[in-house]
Image 1 (cartoon, rainbow, N blue to C red):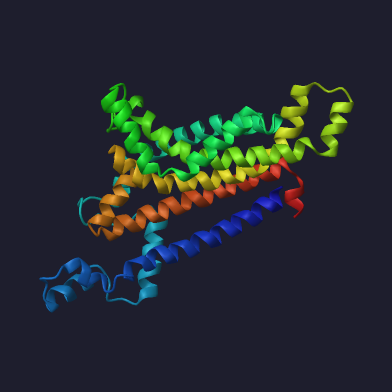
Image 2 (image 1 turned 45 degrees about the vertical axis):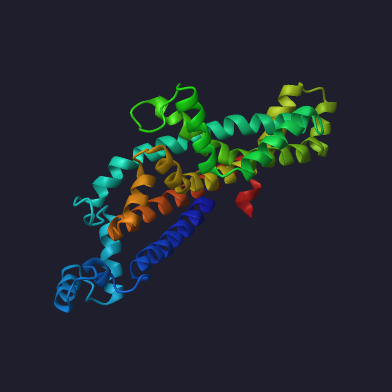
Length: 305
């Protein structure tokens, strides 16, 4: 297990370095960053002064190493719009995004896994068809449209929940449902497919022939093996949720890291955009690493492969 974990750590570090290069290169995708920061009315002397002040006159690899060294210490410079350290901005906004992501993931797993198990236990039944219908609707429905419909229904037609803000748990109910329902179809279908394959396998028939309790066969033997792909998908989906929170936080006016990303992109706040992309990418790498370790613990054969 230690050897497997060490290999995954090395791979995660290499992926993180690659992502850091891509994130840093975004600064130059729109051309000269000094010209972009100076604005259309700036003179040549103004641009040169700005280039020297921000270090854009140095070689690109020197700029990258300097930026990477500071980023490793949690220093991302100052926001061009908010006029404060980027690290303080992210630390202030990230808890809102993480709270939304955790609650949405909990909602998705709590809804989808029982539905997937029931659909596999009773294939082609009303439960199975209902679960598949919910999955198809959830996959086809745009998340922003669902968000707007829930706001119309539960914030205006029946004013039982707030439409915006993040002051209390009630403000997270509608965003949680929208973001969680986005991940529900994939979890439900994968659980259903895995359970169908496992329930028809030889070792499950042997366990039933030995007289084991149905609950023990279902949860201890069947679900444990069927849930392995769901663990990997959960890490991927959680990363997608953090990225998708940009839209959801904008619709519900949740002042999290996703909403900060939208504000920074719309105002060309390059240091903040770079920092948010790097932080989200590192969170995604950590989640994938944890999912790999969980899969190796659930299925020891993965460690050998």
